[in-house]
Image (cartoon, rainbow, N blue to C red; front, top):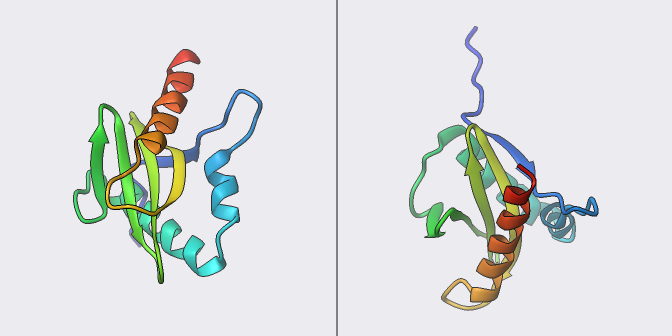
Length: 117
C-alpha cells in the first residue's frame, strides 16, 4: 500500500492576539463554498507548484488560490515557507482585479510573520 502525503503543510495565519482571520472567514461561508475552497487548498498542498487557472502569483511573496463558487468568486491569499503554506487572507472577489486593499492586508500579515522569526 502506497501512502500519499501533501508536498506542503497548510496552516492559518494567526495574529498576535490569537485570531485566525482566514479560518473565521471560511466559517462564515456556506458548507458548499467551504468544501470548494478546501478542495482547492488541498490541490495546492499536494501539487505545489501549480499555476493558472488555480494559482496566480500576485506580488513579492503573495500568491492567490482562485476558487470559482456557484454564484461568486473567492480568493485565498497565501505565502510559502519551506514545506509550509500559510493562508493569510480570504475574501469574495467583487471586481476584475484583486483589490489593492486585499493585497495590503496579506502584505501586512506577512510582515507580522517575518517579525516573529
